[in-house]
Image 1 (tube, helix red, strand yellow):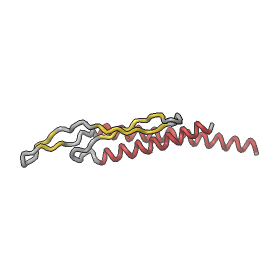
Image 2 (spheres, rainbow, N blue to C red):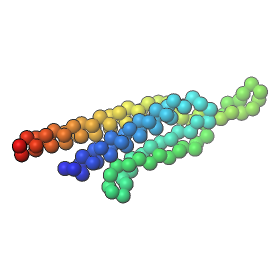
Image 3 (cartoon, rainbow, N blue to C red):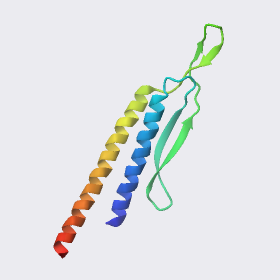
Image 4 (cartoon, helix red, strand yellow):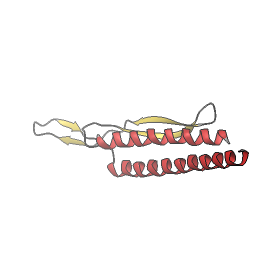
Amino acid sequence: MISGLSASVSGLWVFVRKLENAARTLANCTSDSSKSKKMTVVVDDSEMPASAITVDNTSGPPVQESDGSLNETSPVECADEMTDLVLAKRGYEANLKSVKAHEGMIDSLLDITV
């Protein structure tokens, strides 16, 4: 029962980091040459959820400036980042419900033993 609680708490932290990453990337999506950072959920050495962030080094479309120079714009897709925000929010909510269920089970167990 405790390992399930640990996994849920680790999941909460993973989705907090996913929310932070998506929000940071979304905030910078209109900045020139801003790169997208994708976070994936992986399993660490203790079999708990963890996060891994990779940078997408894809070039953005070039835009010609008024002085004739080419400037790279951001390749970040704002719609993809909004989708990541919604998925991270739902993942956080699911893990939070799991933590609350564990809390209810522990409360019931304490009521039985008292």
